[in-house]
Length: 205
Image (cartoon, rainbow, N blue to C red; front, side, top):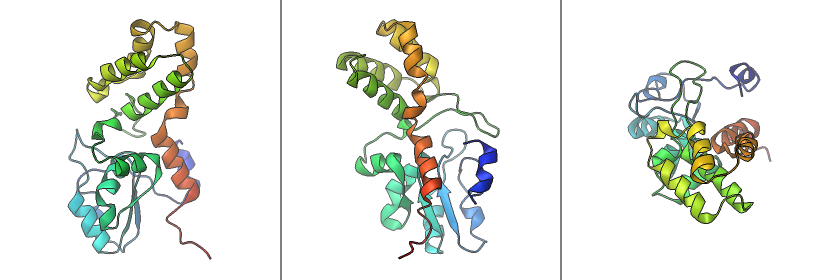
């Protein structure tokens, strides 16, 4: 979804959340905030304390996609609400690493991604394995190789190189499969579904 598409959603788009962003809203009347992406390397991450304070003041806080999903899984017992597959993954597995959803992005809007989250890569490789393009051993080897890298080095180029050089898949096959990678970008799918379903709206009975 590009920036111009947000005009029809009724949602105000803000940069990735960082420490202090929720605190900065608390002088306003309580409303609804959805945290999707957030900083954690270049700036301190959005804090538990500020989210808790907002909840206590009557704000409705949702978490999904990435940093938001992590915070919602950590704080759902305090009233923060979670949405989507990424949230469900973190809520169901407290030991799931934060770096599974981490990526490097540009520092200016529209914050274009420069690497790929491990969560997306795992799902892509699992699909290749389910169609017998990779063996279980080959899948595990690629996952292990990329998991050991710094999250910013988990790029589409690194994935392509692993598939062609480590595993030996033909370049044409790899290119064809990677052309459909959007299908495995769960974070984006969660956001689009959140905007479409609008779970923050009151249920009409």
